[in-house]
Image (cartoon, rainbow, N blue to C red; front, top):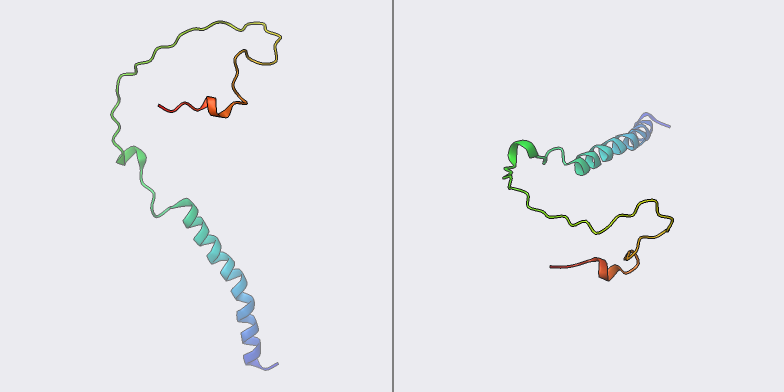
Length: 84
């Protein structure tokens, strides 16, 4: 092989790791959004309001031997979602 052919092979071999490094750098920047992030604590205004909530005690479930909870709705998916 002549010198020019060897140079071409070396450039082709170097393109693999270089391309992998560039792809990793691009995906890191794309996934992390390092150039587009903002400081939530510094740039976001939060107005605190008084919490108004009422909890009602329905009953107790102490020392139970039942495997399921009375009135569970884990299998009825449409009934679990309540839209207001």
